[in-house]
Length: 473
Ligand SMILES: *[C@@H]1O[C@H](CO)[C@@H](O)[C@H](O)[C@H]1NC(C)=O
Ligand SMILES: *[C@@H]1O[C@H](CO)[C@@H](O)[C@H](O)[C@H]1NC(C)=O
Ligand SMILES: *[C@@H]1O[C@H](CO)[C@@H](O)[C@H](O)[C@H]1NC(C)=O
Ligand SMILES: *[C@@H]1O[C@H](CO)[C@@H](O)[C@H](O)[C@H]1NC(C)=O
Ligand SMILES: *[C@@H]1O[C@H](CO)[C@@H](O)[C@H](O)[C@H]1NC(C)=O
Image 1 (cartoon, rainbow, N blue to C red):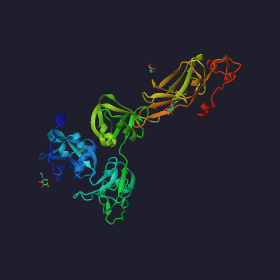
Image 2: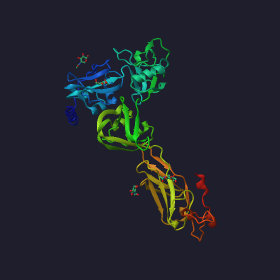
Image 3: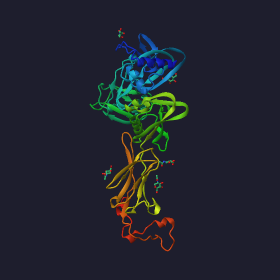
């Protein structure tokens, strides 16, 4: 039945037909029924003269449900869910695109029938405006439910206990910042009450209040930041900054659906929320069977809303995987030369003979797929993509111009900011292949294979190591 309705709504959308609401601004044609207050319950809509419940698969994110709360003058959305009945009834479905474009709910209604009905809880008498999400902004209070009119709160009349109650009422975590005018002054008149909460109350209007309030100077309307409730994390990856994206919302921890791939920009917002820098890649993986997920659209995240405000319940066998740019490991640099088959044993100074072939290798512990290496010296820069987390720069015939201090810089593209890390310096000296003596570093004993390659350069009148390279350690 829900699929039928969905199909019908898609048809409505694609044909450009939209339910034409005869809007009466003094009567919103929206109500919540069966809840504890006029700001909680099953959502009902009056459209074409008919009150019907709203289909349970409409307005499934807090951000969308917030439109209903606003139309009802009930603050912001705290919780949104669905209630099922045993039989179907006529419903109004709400077209998401239409609501997102800023239209009133009634203008976005389409007819259908279902056994699933939308219910929601709004923050009722408190709201935060002008902040970055549902949990921050300028505080406004509606003290009289029978006469919805909002007033701001004087900083001097508001303390940490009051803030605890407001954050709880909004469905947010604990208060973190309480400050005057952080999100502007707004239009609302200053309220005439001082709230005296103990901190444990479930709503601000449950707190006792005194109407004898402190003198309130301009620029002191309370702004409040509550922490985001629940959490966002990446699990099952190589670090805390890579893996399946999981979001806790309405008391449930679920992975994010990966079928509709996110943009790197949206991934960047999530990485920032995770305190993990920038986004390196976003992908999906398939599970063997469907599981409960949160559907989160790229657009909603890009608009700056917190992940949970964009989360709609669903089920899927595709899970979103995200790699953020945690701190990069330091790459290794080593050199090998055709002479004596030396392979990377020397990590600091290195000498090659003019005309001989040598190569400098850059490598890094596997952390990200791809990336590139820049081999950089004071005179040359060479770039190669990382293959198997390494790159080999070949110098077919060594010349004096190749002499210098080299470093490997590993680079990964990320949004909004690229990430790179640099190896230590390795100095290369090019000498003429004059006759020389191989002397074992340890005397009086037959050199082992490793010792064979340690030349005593003093005999050649060339310093074995450059001071600069050591100084950079
Ligand atoms: C609009 O609402 C007012 C006030 O409730 C009512 O008197 C009027 O009849 C309504 N108009 C329409 C077109 O529904
Ligand atoms: C919606 O209804 C269901 C079933 O009655 C209930 O469990 C849930 O708490 C309600 N949610 C809201 C936000 O009212
Ligand atoms: C880098 O060098 C260290 C020390 O020589 C070594 O233990 C490590 O495995 C190397 N890492 C890579 C990615 O080559
Ligand atoms: C090599 O690249 C670095 C960083 O991109 C730059 O600062 C430097 O000037 C370049 N050197 C040469 C010789 O091009
Ligand atoms: C990369 O590593 C894999 C496994 O270690 C190996 O099979 C493959 O040949 C390597 N590719 C290159 C280009 O070296």
